[in-house]
Image 1 (cartoon, rainbow, N blue to C red):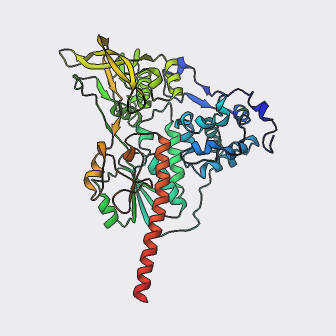
Image 2: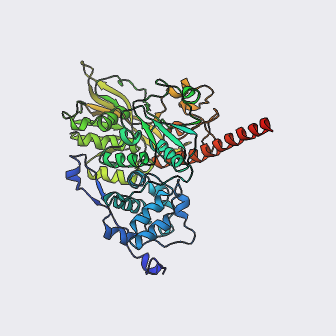
Image 3: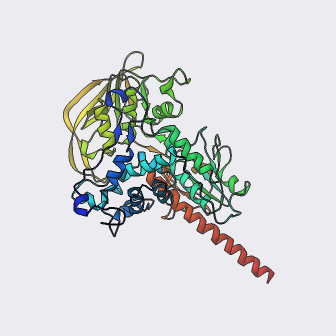
Length: 486
């Protein structure tokens, strides 16, 4: 029993974990409206009551950005929803986004004490509830920096790492400008994640809140072409730069037939649908060819987004082709569950060998081979091994490859003194500092492909590092001036 929760721990553990309210599968597989409605107040209060209020809240240790989870849940228990979201915003500037797309089951919820013997507290859904409450009641108040600083900082890219870095620096009083190559803010949040998982209205509102903190956002500005990093620092007057341009260059399998009509990378496919609104054609002038039999190759969240999008665009058969088993799939369990409800076919232990086309070079089939699992490889997952003589064909007219991505090389090729690693990632230390003084990087640009919350963690760390760097530079300048005048 506590001042927040009148229930004894023995009573709390008997409360079942609450589920989200959701669209029915038969309805949602035909539209791009958000699948999950989240918690209503009644479910949020019941779920919050499950929290054991641990003296050592390991859930916070499991959160990459360090949200004080116990405190925000306690605020829910007394119906102080504004206080709850303010607690979250002290560590996370994008709560409505994280509450929807963050893989809590692998992080904060995975270490929840209640989860050792029972279902963990639904931390992510509680985060979404209070963030949505804040939006619905217009409660957001921009934080005011205690100190206004003269230094200007450039943020390259408006994805989760860039927006987070910008917000944290704005809190510290810096003049922050975000440069975005596309015409709209959000990076992978906009072009990579479908509307049915992250509504654009939510993304736009969170971006507007960062602008309200004094951050300037300039779109249609491709750093490396419109201006280089060197020019931003030497001519534009920026004292530091954070690079958060993501990983938008797709990988391909390198199998025969990838040049046929009807073959897409998941990056192109999802960008055309999400950013360019192909799902609203002809209201938006972005047609996209979608067949009736679609195969999506891959097992991650991007593959799941692509196959569920194909289903909504009219595919009668939408299949996920993955060379390992269900257990090895990196996609979120919730997304897998939703896909199954929507009639997605899962073809496990299946490896594509070539894409077959007709005389007009249009896709007609995908040749595959059965696989079996051997010993774990360097990723920790069991290695798929081909089964001899098990080749077979899947009739398809569209193939979408979702097997990973790497950074676009523009920044690396136009920035002097910037060290890069495998597949073009920008090398950083644990403080997000690159080999170039004053230049920091994070998110997929330095990781090569990761989660939204890890990109946010990098942006937050980079902001702290930039602050320390600029204070160090200013201190050195003042010391030099003192020596001269002395």
